[in-house]
Image (tube, rainbow, N blue to C red):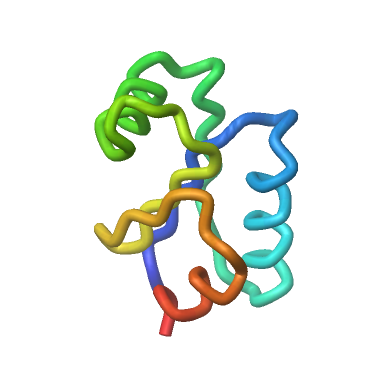
Length: 77
């Protein structure tokens, strides 16, 4: 099983879409709210050229920024 971390915000619809998709697929993940975790927010910016893209998802070291459900499926394959 993959090690999946979702860095996002509670209000972000794209974050919720990704979490819902992973739940539907039965993929466990850790959710990190970057608005409550400054170090996580800094990490997200470092992965996205200084931008705070939500969600930024780490799947076993593969980083996806604002991925589609298809992008998530491909990374998990």
